[in-house]
Image (tube, rainbow, N blue to C red; front, side):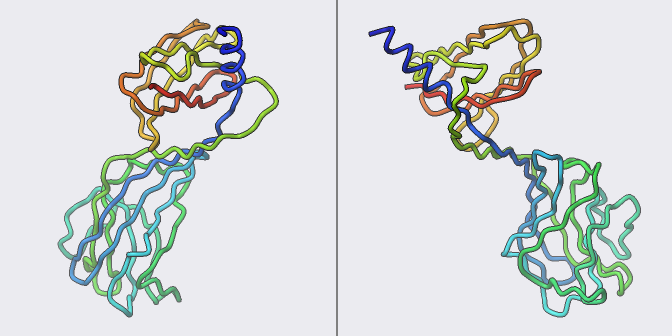
Length: 232
């Protein structure tokens, strides 16, 4: 029976999981001198591209005129607002022919801009002396991992055993000795639970403390993979 079980577990371990990781910071908009409401996100993707995305609940009063959107670390919103050191994202007013008084929209941020570079978003009416239209404060980063199984006919370089695990102890077995590997454990919502770097190992024993489904993300010098592991 044990031989059959090992064969079955080895076959299951050869499932590769595709993944898409997004790091997000969110701000809820509040009024300034005009009506403003909604939610915006800073979104950092696998390819290091960074977007500013407005949800569909974004809205302000009609006839938006010459309102510029800035990312800034300056929280002093007395007029006129000092925009030095701020990042101009876009002009969402009608002065440039745009009309984004409400609704969803997404803007790409310049290369080299980091997701933690700015803490605030502020809307400024330039035409009327850099008037404070509204603002928001970005919260902490949240990592979301979308993981889906992909069929493969080739064995991957890593296996986990036993899977499922009754006591939470799981051994990670590398096909070759790894000089430098990063082991990260995520829950089903993509939240990072733990992170550990190991050196010069071919096997590594780890513990999953509670029952549930986990994804173990392994980043090695020759690539990366994700293993789905269950603790009973």
